Amino acid sequence: MNSTEWKEKLSFIRNDFFNSAIKSNSGDISALETEYIGRKGFLTFLLKDLKNFSLEEKKILGPLGNTLKAEITDKISELKNKFGSLSSSGLKNDFDLTLSARPYPKGSLHPITQTINKMTEIFLKLGFSVAEGPFIENEYYNFEALNIPEDHSSRDMHDTFYASIKDSKNRNLLLRTHTSPVQIRTMEKLKPPLRVISPGRVFRRDAIDASHSFVFYQIEGFYVDKNVSMADLKWTLETFIKELFGEKVKLRFRPSYFPFVEPGAGVVMPCVFCSGQKGTCPGCKGTGWIEVLGAGTIHPKVLKYCGYDSDAWSGFAFGAGVERFAMLLFGIKDMRVLYENDLRILKQL
Ligand code: PHE
Image 1: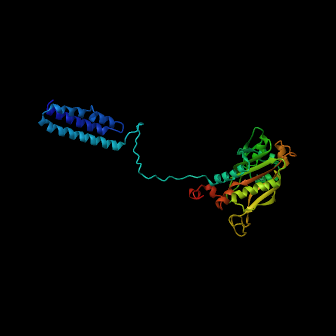
Image 2 (image 1 turned 45 degrees about the vertical axis):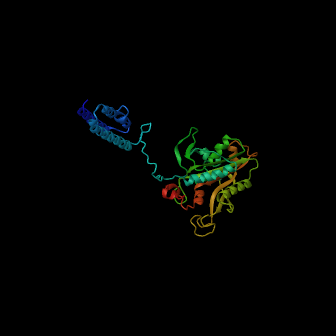
Image 3 (image 1 turned 90 degrees about the vertical axis):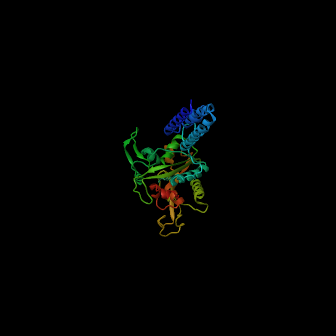
């Protein structure tokens, strides 16, 4: 080959390389490098040929060859920068590790969930276990076995969502209006002694306002053993409330009526918004007290419905409104805050 042919070859290699470089993508840059300037590359071969030329010719051809080699080397590193060095999966690996991290939105548990968790934790420490029941109940578990017969006026206290279908035993189906049916379901299945709580959603045909919703949460609790009395109930609820709100909080038990307990009590604690001072406080409607639980000793009839010998066993039961506790714990005066899920508010809780 004479020097003209050598120059032609050089220009052919240049054109060929830059054409391929334009079409190259992240996958074939290393191949391109090997093909042109690798140990057996086109340009490498051509440069090796220089040894056959005269010194005069070498002085001219040598710099031409080296210039092209430098151009190709530059182009290859430019392409490598563009596509990033290749990972074995063929994916781009062009992270900039020096960039500062982007802040991402931090999630948290909903205040109702937090409240249920807190309340549950205390009862677990007191030896209670957790049971759950269905949202769709039948009237036997929601009412009858709880000593609320069909024509009993207290069914009116529970504004019930009825389904238009019945179950296989021809019982009306409904959305449970309280968590008390879980008492029956659990006692039917398990033998005493029992200490169980049951948190969950309940439903009533109520209009939404600052203290009502048609879906809300309760935590049921019940304890059946030999010689369980109102004293055990008092101790348990007082221990629970003190654990939740502090040692100083005092409970008041006021007579109340629930067909499935006898005697029954409405349990109130001093209003956290006005510290029990009577006045115009919207949190307690000016009474200084907030009712937080319904409770009592389990009616013998209820024990009998579940197949328990009511002479041998006795028990207490209570039902707590979770939203009430959430409002007290988080200082919320309007229950709707808990359902509207306005992130600006939830983020503060
Ligand atoms: N189930 C009752 C209610 O929803 C609360 C309650 C539970 C009362 C257990 C006494 C015992 O109002």
